Image (tube, rainbow, N blue to C red; front, side, top):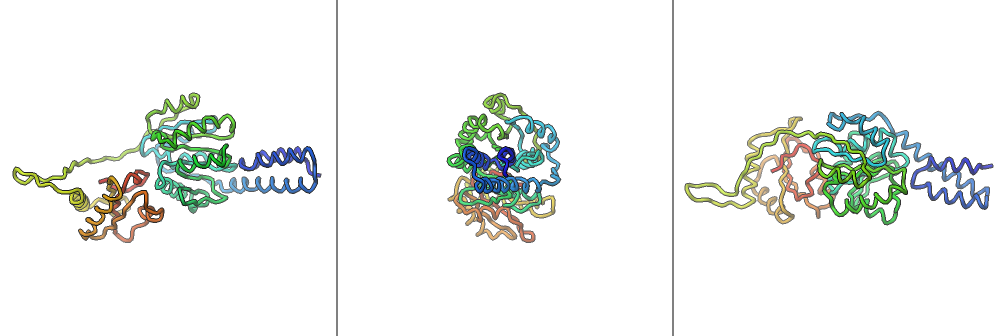
Length: 362
């Protein structure tokens, strides 16, 4: 004889997304018990519990690289464990984007539901997911997955799902209580896009109905008090960043010839700057050539500049356009391994404003 009380207790161990549906079925059967239906329900419950247990079995020793956020790991662990909402302020280079999802895993989160991790841009979502997967020694799409418009690489084993904020906002239409998730991390909240503002407002109303849902807001060190106040004075943890020496060289688009100015166009100016950087012979830590990142206003300027640079026949260089209308496969070429000593020269719109090491902005 199946014990209904025991089934109710087991539902608490199921995936969050299954609990309401299973509880409703159990309530219906409680009023009109049916042995065969109770058996089927018990099997459904055990299958859901098994899914949670399989995710728990994935947990292994988590290593943290030498980043500023790693030094505050214990403090962050405690804050996330003891509070429903935490605001983490970190400067560029602090490591908050890649390490906070791993800290959530260390707490045992991501088993009953996913750790949803939002990024403002598609390219950043793909890059962040790839980096976290690499640090956890897993293939992309398994323990760590990502979803952007027209591309979904998430499996039943996924614990950390990186996505654009637009994807998460769209999910609220069919999953009003965001029951797929055990944690939501809103990254780069200081950008204050419409999507981010809508999400923060929506989740604010959702939290009392989902006491098992945790929200982590990460931001640059601006407006953090406002985020905290909006969420009933949520605790704030500030993490220092890590910056490197930067030389700024101003190169106006003209050259002085005697008392006259000879104007040069944008493409010629870029070509001149690229040649100068190549003459400096800067190297990455692994000894390979340093890639060059050039920001341009839009697709037309990117195409024109690419044509100019290709006609210059620069040796051992790979010219890679990067803008929003490119397919994901084309965008991902900027992250590919270089062959031999080939240097990458990336011509980007603002989609290139993502976490990417070893680039020299031009």
